[in-house]
Image (tube, rainbow, N blue to C red; front, top):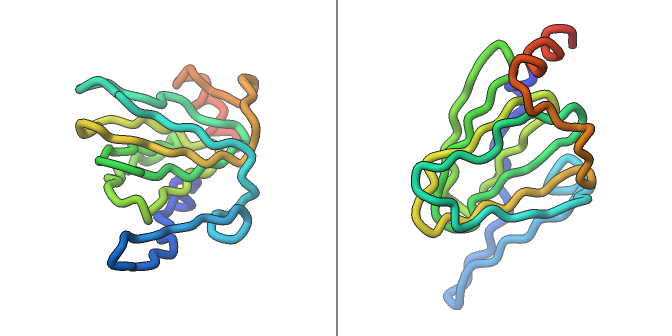
Length: 136
């Protein structure tokens, strides 16, 4: 099942009394070359983000500051993952519906994507996603 491929990636954390450092290299620390990076921030209390799936795109979601939950759904099972450390990333495979909620005040979410923005790669209608997920 696709949801089983969605795992936490523990990035290298270099401890230093002056402050910690974490680095991420595409194709090495994440299982794809990074083609796009975007941020979610200033999310109002109670708001949800995501609410879609990708046909081919893969992503790694990181809580750079604060915390939030990612709810994953592959059409068969659902899993909730709480992110609150900047050295942990959640790998999300293609054909997995994702919704993000429970954002703390000041939360910043960084997303690393395997491809450039392409509206044709999105399922934004859950029923259409479920229909497509059953034939794969």
